[in-house]
Length: 290
Image 1 (cartoon, rainbow, N blue to C red):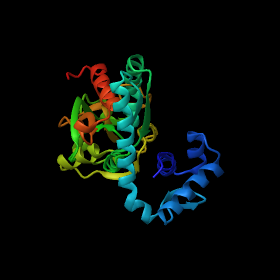
Image 2: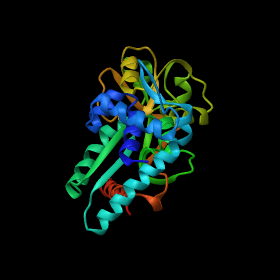
Image 3: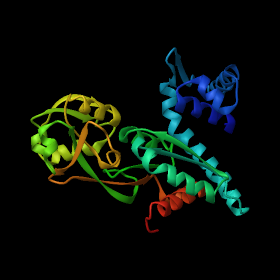
Image 4: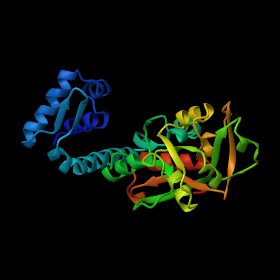
């Protein structure tokens, strides 16, 4: 299978849109469609379901998708290993991350990495935990910045992040130095979507609390906006709450609750040279010992 055809197909699947995939790869849309149709003819079955909403892999394509991902990963790794032997630091790193980590960690990590390795590009996908796990399983990314959870992958801890309560500034609980999680259960509750963040649900479950969930959202800023308008209370990671949010009071929980943040890697021994360099640089930026 021609590498360009494989990359064209995977890019279309990842973006879910032929126009965007063509723009990213430097094709016209008709040119990209021709490449994918040629690959379908080569394999003998359709690969994409096309609709007004975009494109998605067919059932037949889903069966071979892990193999395509592995071929793509091995091809990139071969190119990077060869460049490494020649003394060149080049290649691509594909990472996934929580939006909050993108905002508060990544700028410094990317700055330091770009200064060390200007020939390596970094592609970033923002998502929640469930989608990150799927990408790790498929081999679509080299590593994920996320929180610790049960997983078959290699875990590299970076730091601990506390879980805090968020209540309207005028709420009676805002006068407390810390807030008992059980007291939040008596209030209308805004819950971060479990598929996006496993930690909030874990903290609530471990405390034996059953909140009155009125709304759910994947977006921390949307949750904070609802808290500000007194639609309810919530608990959120402190990483997102260190900045001031007018109209919202944030307090530690009782009992104290934490999550561990770090990097999840499918196979530490088989990381590409570019991904190894990125991980080492990120750890240095974050002050994590090798």
